[in-house]
Length: 587
Image (cartoon, rainbow, N blue to C red):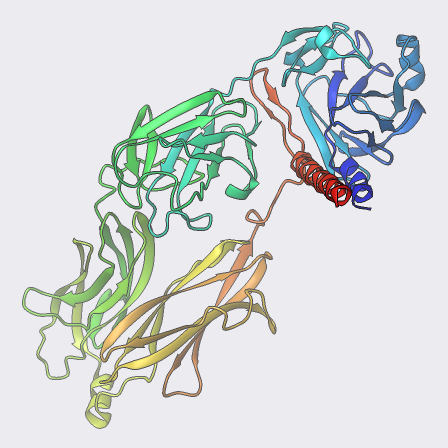
């Protein structure tokens, strides 16, 4: 019963390949085109119900002679006109299948699909490989394609004339991050990464290409360690996340990174002797330097990338461009954190004699990143007239960097002073501001919301906060309190909290942020509109790709791994059955 089960499974995990293509008959191509398929499996394969995919269409296969069961090492011809094919090759006596298609003379993708419409094999061919109207075909031999004499139903090795050698020299290591912030082996897209760039005019499939380090550890390129499969398109990038043990690349000392093709040919080698946490090694011109990490995009050169930069973009004031004592100002700031272990930034107003505001503090954790915030700043009421009208500086300070912005402050907010006089220094029970969020995000991309909460009480307080994306009554980012955080803020202190959400469906939604103080039953909330666009984070290409470059090609089979695993399990099962029979015989 076990053997019977495997005999059913294995034909669906076959390695039937397209072995020869006659795409350009001299003169008019009509009715003369054909392809040859070959069974390189060690058992027979039944192709009943299979399809030949060409020009966006799944073509039916109609048996003319022979059998749909292709024996091991056997051939079959799929022709666009069986009558004309037999006139062209009257001595042909193998399996002949008729279908309806018309092959392009270059750049055509051909696919074999099984009865479940799963791809078994695909190939994209080009006229530069040969067979360009000269009564010759292109055929596969020794893991390469080349021009050969027409061999329908025969071994290509007897007739091949010009083998195309693989050349992947235009695929280069463009950037790599040996020591990321946080865990080196974190889930993609975090952790270490290696970025490749394809400078060729053709796409390539890098399945089974691999990297090695100086200790001979190996990381193969596969769907499991990339975000977009193994295809690297022309003039584009492919980012590979090694996720090897506790880290693939050294954080300290000498390290060597080597890049190989699927035939174990070394394509490129890069070495380094030191690295900085959170910074990439990037190729700028012909030089490797450490820069800000830019996975899947062009490298950015910045001489002072290790230095932090703080900048006050603007202070939102009234039409008179002045502020009053007691006002709560909104200050837009840009923060670039370089190679600093510090996390806290403070914002305040002062002149050379004294500060005239509370200090607003918030945190930035990620190194080598740009962030923009709109930060609230509370000026003192000055009800006792201690401070003079005049020019003051808004100051942002942190990460050993500082920046200032001049404003005019004149007058006081009388209503605020009256309120303080009558009621004392009463503040709202939950004092909070939304520092940043992105109103437009790609589907599947992480949405980060940064919230500032101030505890104006004289004792520490516990706060709960969470966020979700919704439309109508439905939450599209999971359970509404899924990302809830609970924090304790000391007396007269503030804290910044980052909340993460993800939405996988594009559309227009609302972002709801909830804040609950420990002594309140009802939470406060902030609501903003948010737009989820595109679907880039979710798009996958269901059709396996073939790699090629400058008259070279690597074929791939989408079912090959399944076939090999099935065969391994099948062989092990046979061994166990034989052992059991021997034991029974001895006993």
